[in-house]
Image 1 (cartoon, rainbow, N blue to C red):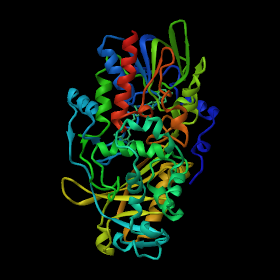
Image 2: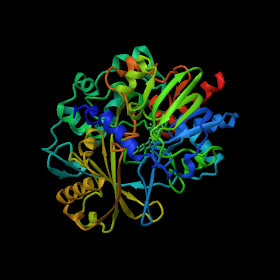
Image 3: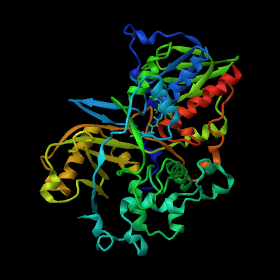
Image 4: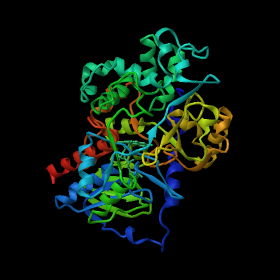
Length: 488
Ligand SMILES: Cc1cc2nc3c(=O)[nH]c(=O)nc-3n(C[C@H](O)[C@H](O)[C@H](O)COP(=O)(O)OP(=O)(O)OC[C@H]3O[C@@H](n4cnc5c(N)ncnc54)[C@H](O)[C@@H]3O)c2cc1C
């Protein structure tokens, strides 16, 4: 569990080789690749952060060129569509307090709906045994101790940290008084007397590489934000139940970034990874993998720090930014979507969803909000669990998932059609679903890691202060745009 996620990252040489291999071939340059060479602001990354910065800057009359490494806009908003099935492979839930996301939707005529997949109850499978939640507290396979025994495994992590939450104010995580919590979450739990068996189970739900490698303060920061959104009950899991008010983007999450990109005056340059940034003479030059150089008065780096690691900066960045980039930790995530063809739970009489200590971790069976039928199963693996499988294609991973499901739950054999899956850990331009801090990292660089360096500004959810998820991307894109507008 404590394996350092960075040891899984490819070498710089391998990544640059990959980038160059994906650059457009000479003579086949598509229309979007012919953008202006000189603009007021170059923006690296067409996720919500980069697109929001671009929209604000263009709105104030500046010329902007967004460059995007992949073949699509949206970054971690990614909707898969196959055989009439629509799968959110990235962000889907728009929180009630997401003012900027909601405002962008309303400006761009992007619809929001409150209808999303309805969760179903979990069957537990722990230490080789399947059991119902009501049997957990007294089950022989429950190796936790004392009062822990009655806490369901899928509530352990958020429930315990929710009870220990040292602050409720979403901004308080950066208060010097709270830096005492900037230690390994696993160490924090041990200091509270939590058993190793409980730590092992809590680790399955952590949205970070592992409880050993994530800072307790990082967890507290996100829980304080989730509290503001309405997640206050320590007896409920954060995932897999309806515990917060949220909306979904009509037609799929990627509808929003596509609409934001379409509203820009200058089209986003796709398949254009930035590989080098050079600052001097009152300008910033950005070299793309195909050799093109774009010049701007300012630059917004709105790519995740896991990907910024592969961009060479001249002169080098100051320590806070350089250390944050070199040490950036992301929570790998892989999802597998299945259509349910037979009600397997009627055959074995057990709850439809699964929460396990097996490599596939969790399987959420969801009811359709339209028909009420339980028709979708999403297997969701997070952190080191996902990284462990990321040496192979997601289709090969799905074979393992199917085999494991059949082994632990024979009624599922012939009851599922695999549709599609996606691994964020394998995406070289993102590497995970979100940035988290490792022990000591909040203290070392959280305050300064997003500060502008001359004409270079930074945005992206990894720089979140008050918000989280999509809203934090919008927040940080807006902040970078404001910094530039104050200077321009
Ligand atoms: C599985 C999953 C579930 C999630 N669920 C939710 C949810 O329900 N609700 C919620 O609010 N949030 C959720 N999130 C988080 C949310 O998606 C992110 O916080 C947000 O989209 C991040 O936006 P961003 O612009 O900061 O980064 P990104 O969306 O990652 O965009 C960065 C862009 O930079 C590009 N890039 C990288 N390197 C380069 C380079 N060298 N040159 C050019 N371009 C580059 C990338 O290709 C990418 O398109 C989820 C994320 C995932 C993956």
